Amino acid sequence: MTVDVAELVHTRAHRPEAIAEAAARRVRRPLIGATGRLMIVAADHPARGALGVGDRALAMADRADLLGRLCLALGRPGVDGVLASADILDDLLLLGALDGKVVMGSMNRGGLQGARFELDDRFTGHRPEDIERLGFDAGKLLLRIDYDDPGSLTTLESAARAVDAMAARRLPVFVEPFISRRDAGGRPANDLSADAVTRSIAIASGLGGSSAYTWLKVPVTDDPDDMARVMATTTLPAVLLGGDVAGSAEDRAGAYEKWRGALRLPTVRGLVAGRSLLYPADGDVAAAVDTAAGLL
Image (cartoon, rainbow, N blue to C red; front, side):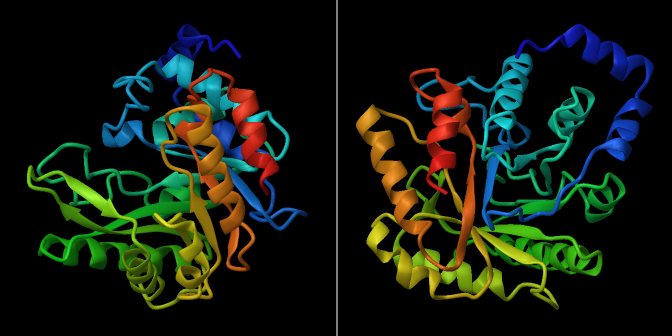
């Protein structure tokens, strides 16, 4: 799909209220459809300054190109919806691309990639009241915990209050937890060992005064054979985090097989993937999306 940037800019400049009007008339659907599964395309990376895909440092910087890829992905069979920051969702509303789709607002984007404060994941995106006002279907928050960083306690408390606020509105919130550590150069990295992912799930499951509306968004562990033990940590429904799958066709096939195995677990209800589907190495967005949707 070719996106008319001039038209989008004209509407934003002359009729900013058109965004709220488009949200009000959007055709909604249940979070979980007839299949009982969720296939969500993620595009909230730019709001955290994370524009790279594989070895392409600014792959996501062209907004018209990104919107075109998102519209193509959302039009493929089996794709239930999108996760994005406010600016991208506003564009998709104006493009009429969100009718009949699950819309998830990204809530905390303050931990900018590469910043000294990267693990300070403050809530700079959608607030619970924004998600409710716009008639969106869910929110998502990132929870990175560094045991050596006292600031992680602030992040935990902020995440818990967001869980409370979403539960009070009966809105699902997808919590994406990691145990993180800084390397010798001070760069944070997520620990994907089975023990670390198990701990992160246990911590995230206990956030807030109610877990009734809490979902988890979890990575596949370094050893996918450990996923059954890891997911036994909770009874909360979960979706898999797709991540940035770069490399050869064999590498991508291996990642898909890891997803396929984890999707058989009773706790796992779907998949949220972004860059690996929107920017596949071969450039075929439709094929990448169809392959991922087929896993469900």
